[in-house]
Length: 299
Image (cartoon, rainbow, N blue to C red; front, side, top):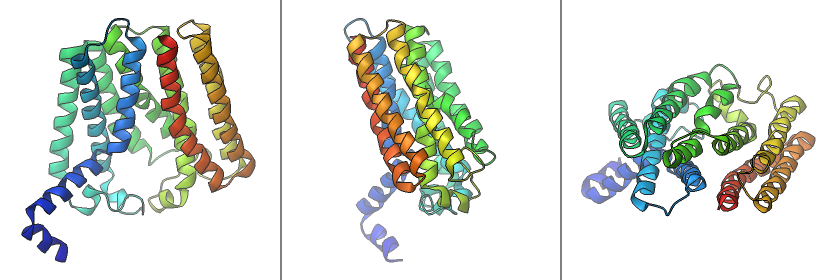
């Protein structure tokens, strides 16, 4: 009650809280990480001096589409979010944002984002952007309630940002584009499952079993996590093998992948939360670091 009185007495406070709810609705930090990937894909594909307005429009469209997908996720899972400690205070779950309001915001963001890609980039990027939005929101999100391998469905839209960035500047999908896609595609498995390991108890409050085998924190699940990280090794070599980056950058990426693999190996040997937490933080560092190396290696 005191909070409501404060909002009435001080409208600026109310605006501040509303803005905070919008930021939480679109998952700002996650959205910015995705936008970074899209920008990396663009810079990876560029062969001429950068046109900043074109680059800026790509980043804006990525922000809008990703924010839209994250918002739709919260709308669809609002009742489930109430059951978990991590998500119980989300704006749609608590009712701070009405469903119609969140739906309107996310719909406008998604439509505008796809239109920007269609008008200022090319039709392929617009289709990829639409695919990533719809598959994340309406395939991956409901699939999480059914199987831990929803991560496979989510990995496709999750790997689209770099592809969209690359195709926005090149207009085509080639081996360099495939290299970008595969690294981000494979990376999502150890990243997602490390988070699932950390939040397993919280997820189970909502009936989610997101660890790879039977939803259990055991050696078998940990082995799958390790294998998923192991698959990054050949795909780290792939950009060198097809000649799309320099040998120096390629070796740096390969070393980074072995370091990341070691963190996954520790999850297998230790089977504890501490190892999963190190893998999760390692995954957050690994992807942007590798993408920077890819861009530098391409130059």
